[in-house]
Length: 237
Ligand SMILES: [Zn+2]
Image 1 (cartoon, protein in one colour):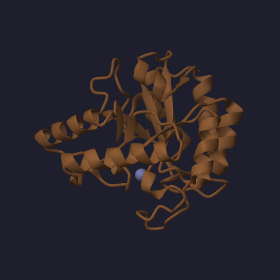
Image 2 (tube, rainbow, N blue to C red):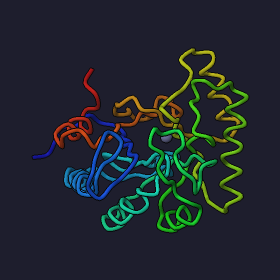
Image 3 (cartoon, rainbow, N blue to C red):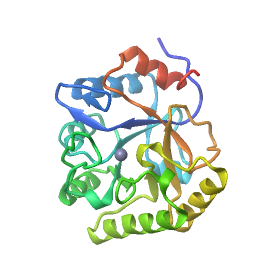
């Protein structure tokens, strides 16, 4: 059965990947593979950040993203994505490359520069996730400017190619419209052309605001049916 789906761009947000155990922020290899195979069977086409930037999206586009550059995503997701020929983008908190996710209650190892280089060589895209994994809701525009500059310069120093896109840590942006506009101006001036929040909705095309792209959170603690419904329609309320 082909699902009837809302038209638009779907952006899937993953975090950690494991061989077996799952939780809200961790999917296992079997679930990831089943999800990607289902998307392909339903005639979704996998897109890249570059496709979004150029406005050159395939039909029924879906973009796969991983936040935080967890080392386990490198170890367990990379082989699945490579085997299925699915591209993905990784949002990297650049101050923590080769360290651990100190902002988590249970900090986990993060990819080092050579792992990020190997991903890039495989065709994965790298993008920003705030230099120090900070919530942009609490930063001034001047702090955002510095944060973005540090992110780009760190990647450049490590010889890593980056797409001018950013995943907001915690999905956070200022609620106040004036502060939000100032943050967006700082992002644009800093060279960021796409930014991703959470929101759990399908994005209409053309995009209403390329700095407010919504992502569907993929959880390890929900049923496959819940994943299918979220992909088809986004959140209903
Ligand atoms: Zn994060």
